[in-house]
Image (cartoon, rainbow, N blue to C red; front, side, top):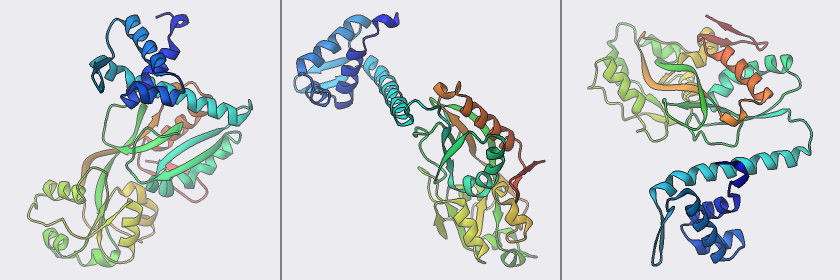
Length: 314
């Protein structure tokens, strides 16, 4: 379709009507008459040659075509609104601040300690960082996100940084109790520390672990539940409990002897850390620079965040 004839007003009317499933509510939200909304939607339907709504007495519902079009139009308007707000806030000045969201443990254990490297190399790019629990929606108001997720199809461009491998970590005194003790007995006599994953049972990683090592008789629906792996490991370092986490996130604690891995067993649970960027932002120089920097630092584990802000790859 020639963009000169792109019916923006009709699309706005359709988006409001689809969101409210009501021409009356759509008209109220747009501060226009109901007939104007209806007229715009009919014009859009005539243009594309298919109905977008099923119109029944006292009921308005989207057709298959309408359900397909609505999220695209909504996201497009949201994106336009977001960029306009940014431009207005920046008052025409060059954009030098990146909005970045990071999972809580990833941010605290790996990313934040080395950000001074990025600031040293790119002093003109400021970074606005938000951390949050490990699993969250990818659709956030950020130009760059690191998301903890299973592989999935999304409207973002995803770069895999690494797939996690879970191992048991515990305090050295707890590990000492494992000497000459069968693994099944060790698991049964210690608290299990769980890391909450949205939409998964509280004991999901431990269930995978005990099946993988061949001890399905071990009861794993017990122990403490934490929002982040960092909290689970912090509790384990206090002297109690077994944390099932990715050791790559806790290399400094392991190197310092604060926490150890008493067994060589590890599992893939299907989750990984992905760099997520909206396709519209790929051409932004600052986004491109930060994306390349993150990939170079974290796409080849093992890596270590060390004092002074450097990392080393293995």
